[in-house]
Amino acid sequence: MSHKRVAILVSGGGSNMVSLVDSMTGDHPARPCLVLSNDAEAGGLKKAAARGIATAAVDHRPFKGDRAAFEAELVKPILEAGADIVCLAGFMRVLTEGFVSQFQGRMLNIHPSLLPKYKGLNTHARALEAGDAEAGCSVHEVTPLLDDGPLLGQARVPVLAGDTPESLAARVLTQEHKLYPAVLRRFAAGDRSPVQLAWEG
Ligand code: GAR
Image (cartoon, rainbow, N blue to C red; front, top):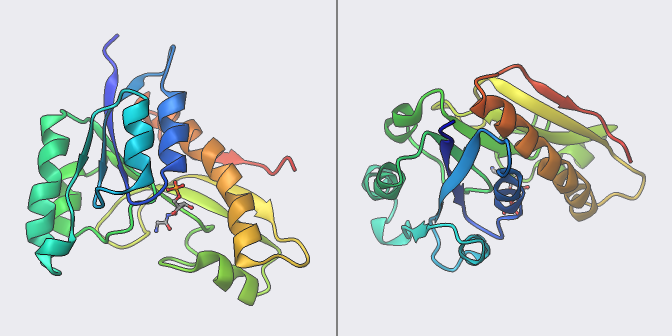
């Protein structure tokens, strides 16, 4: 069996990247081929290198807001790595249609809310402010609209009395680490039926 090749894009610590990488062993239909960041100092790059995965960085700052020029560089290592699937895992740059269309139907993103609620930033603070009884995370196929696109999985967590954005984020993150690998395994096998993870406490 030839494995699907997965490129993972990170901006920060890369805990979701680690959970994806560590899941791709044994009978998993995919293997990591690249971890790529817009920040050469991203902690995720070191973690990937320590796992023997090829890494690359394309700093967005010299492009001074010229997204198309940034993306023209960003795409190069992905193409060179021969990626079949692209996973955004805490990648904090907005991608334009020009980039997204090159990976139509094969780019995934994880977002820390129960989409379609709370697209964009500060999701946990917004869920608390709204008085929501539950929160969670979503994995979806990436389309040109931000945090949109067909849902491939969701995991729910309860909001607890006294929660802060930080405590809620930590609870959601533990579920992200279960949800994203579960979705990727299905997706790489050609199955797009949504994964639903219940809260097990
Ligand atoms: C995760 O919570 C992810 O859902 C979120 O950033 C965090 C990255 O953590 N992504 C977004 O907010 C995307 N808009 P990680 O680097 O430890 O995986």
